[in-house]
Length: 255
Image (cartoon, rainbow, N blue to C red; front, side, top):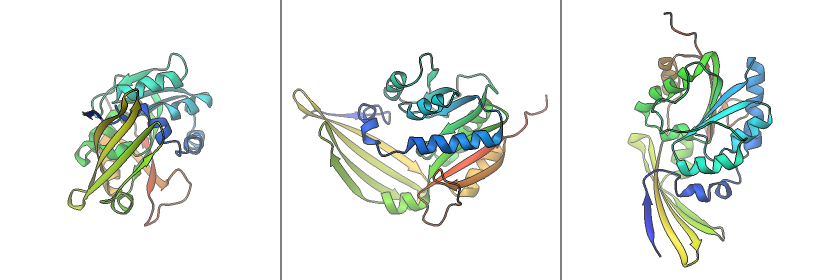
């Protein structure tokens, strides 16, 4: 069995990502976003930040929206190109590097499936600023985050795995409470003509206090901030696993 380490999260996992995440309720997420967009007004152009394999883009496009995507993994974008509408703009960019889009060119942006947790706390204002620059004044930014409760109690210092016929994986977690961080070592075993090949990816996620998120949003130029539980309409509780935030872009700075 050969073993390789991937330096970019999801480059190896991209080959099995859609089956691995088949339980994700993208349709429910898209319906929540549609409600937010409708309540806010005229939303036509949407940017999916950390778009992965494009599942959410495809659903939003089915709603008649013009959607672009950005992701740091070329492997994920390769699969997104096969799923999204012909001509969809898909950008290969490792945020918080600047997005290759014109300022104020989108009505809304989304960032789903705990992608924000992959950024260090000191990177949060920079990430939000990148998104804010792409939005018109009054534009929406809807994103979700894994909570402290989830990283401490679901992931923690656990390990687990599964055999899904064409591939298997082992996932080991190490939680660092003083750094608000959980490290994941994911070993992926994919079946080939000569047996299984092993690939290893290292991931890290951080959790954020609500005020930390609000403060980073204000620094980036966002004004109103609301939060609900996991793409639902009720408020988060002490055992909430995922929060969904909505920011509103403030007015453009005076010239």
